[in-house]
Each structure stands twice: as C-alpha cells, then as structure tokens.
Length: 136
Image (cartoon, rainbow, N blue to C red):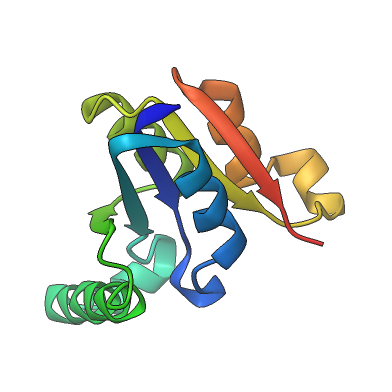
C-alpha cells in the first residue's frame, strides 16, 4: 500500500475510471491521490506566433478543465504544472515524495517504439514504483 500516489492524466483523454480504481486499490488508508496534468506550452515556430497572454489563457482553460473533471472526485487532489510531460511527471513525483505513479498507456504504435511513449519514459526514469494501466 502506498501513501502518496500520482495519477498523471491528459485532459483530452479524460479520466480513466480504471486508472483511478487501480490508484484507490493501491492507496493506504489515510493516503492521498493526486491527479497531475502537465501543460506543454507551444514550442518551436508555433510559439513565435503566440503572445504570453494567449499562453496564459490556455493554461487557465486547462486548469478549469482539470478542476471540472475532478469535481465529483473529492478524494483526488488536482495539480497542474508547465513543462515537458514525462520529465515534469518524474520531477513532480520526486519533489512531492510520491511513492507510486499510476499511469495509463495506450497500445503502442510504431512511432512509440522509436521515440518512446510518456509512460515508458516515466517507467524508465522514475525513482518510485510505477504501475502502468494499459488500455485495450
């Protein structure tokens, strides 16, 4: 059983009922579950066409979406950070003494074998236990 569980989530994929069920099953009595969304600001040439206000508005919209998705889940705390997805998940887990990350993963495509998915990067580099919930 784990005291601090992190459940990274992409807002466009929604909250996986199964991933949260796994997190709850692994959570010790009195433990906490945190849902984390990493906001990746536009990179490269796209960022040249966006002003800081547009990026700030995007972050605020994402924060509101995260809060709305968790409104019926009072036992899950929400957090949002800016950065590269895999690196930010790993850094957040280390900074907050997370002892287990429960992360969803899709069936890998060909590009994942060359580039690696977020879940596989987290598995390789996290300093805590990682449970991967594979979707069908």
